[in-house]
Length: 247
Image (tube, rainbow, N blue to C red):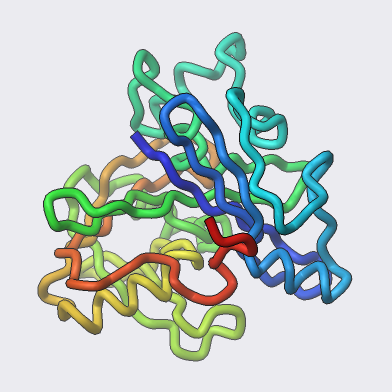
């Protein structure tokens, strides 16, 4: 079960994605706290804190999931719910709210927020599953290549060194014939680059976890990145990810 998520916000003025909060579940208690990314964006005049959670330096706790996140869960009464859970490759009988948000991103068409899981060490391994980003920008024949991939198919990462938005951007590609099939999510890219540098590319595994033929493009290709967890490695340690309030 996923217990910790990063909340990212997109600045409409700059198109930059900024980590503005951290959502944690501890037993039956939910905890939300703002990050230094939120503090910087408020200082820039571009970000407004959420609803009743106006104090950037307060740690908010609740026995129920905060409304801003609850509203990002798909209602079980929706006719597409079973298909949706299948696209996420999750078990609807054991699905928790944070597990759904971690896999789906909690994306809504009406705002600019997205959630990402904070990877946790299990059996000395770093493992994260994510949907390939940017598929909607690909030519149709590349999307057709995605449709013919199989679970377990090996994928490869390429550094996009001239990317204007993310200096750590990682392109996902297939083997022979080499074809681009999207990007690793931006908020993982710096950590993934560090893991590639520490462990070496031959010690990193990237593979297809699931291909959804009839889903929206954002849920088309589920991938898995896996490698050993280096000593002293901590995910999301960049300054903007740090909480404004020390606990």
